[in-house]
Amino acid sequence: MKGEKKLLIVAILLLLITVSFGTYAIYKSSATGTGTVTAATWNVTVNTANIATTNTFTLGDIDWGSSSVSKVAGKIAPGDEGTINIVIHNGSEVDIDYAISLSEVNTGNTRITVAPVTTGADTGTIAYGGEDVTVQLKVKWEAVDSDSANNEDVTFAGTEITIPVTVTATQRPGV
Image (cartoon, rainbow, N blue to C red):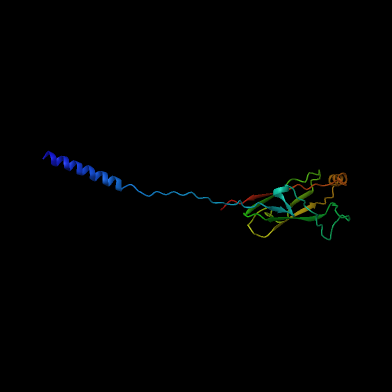
């Protein structure tokens, strides 16, 4: 009986060893791959200037219309009102948000103002491949007939006016 127990133990051990080796794979493989991606282009122009590379643009001439108070081209007088166009083009491969900020025209004359012709036009979105956006700004010198306004206007005559405009384009996050 002792011999049968030994034989039984050996048989069980052999069975366990066989089953253990049978659960391990004989084949083994691995692979490594690579992929590439190219960054999307960033190209936003304002009035034909690529602001991504130059950080500046030129506003262009003010259109005074046919009823300009000043009779000399490029000049403004009390009562004049004109428009300037800002054309924003999205040449990027992403959607963009734009924002136009207008600093106060720092001339010392409080009646000269610059503002978007259309309320809310100073911000928006241009889709990839979308059409250019034109934002019109109104430049106005309010004519007021009072002693203080007249003195201010006369003192201001001949002064060059700078119109500070900043256009900021930002990649529109995926929404």
